[in-house]
Length: 225
Image 1: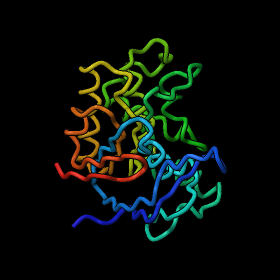
Image 2: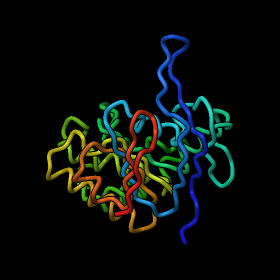
Image 3: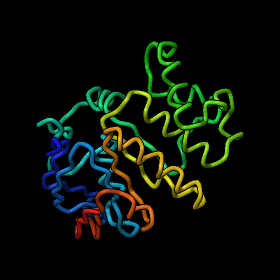
């Protein structure tokens, strides 16, 4: 049986205060295992991106636990969270998140804080695997949407993370490029990396190993594919 990676207990997130508050997550419980390839689905405002961002250490929770190796990441300080984001996970965004003034190679090296030169060959290797190594000197505006997302995935892989979080990674792409990106993520998952992906596209979700559906801040269905 696969090793437990995250154990989520009573996870709650409230935005705002008093009469203006919105409860985005309501006492969510979930176990995520190493090697999972999870699609998180649900209508806009259902809590799926909020859930993803809390697990990625990007926003705090209001209550609950997110246990990683029996440590609650919700109790970590800024340095611990920064190290976690830089060393243990990769994050892929719908809008790619590339820096327009940096070329492809330097965008991939963004998570590296020290000794960037040491990681140059690793970055080129990741770009080569993703078939975008011919564009190392190109700026983002010179790339297609599919190429930009490949660069974003290479950046997410630079530290060989345990887990990749992907928020609508195909949302800005046409159907052909969307399938190409999912095929790449499948290959990454086959090599042992856990992937947690938010999507509103049923055709994408069906290609994952597990589908978790959110509604009104709660998990209402889990399907094993």
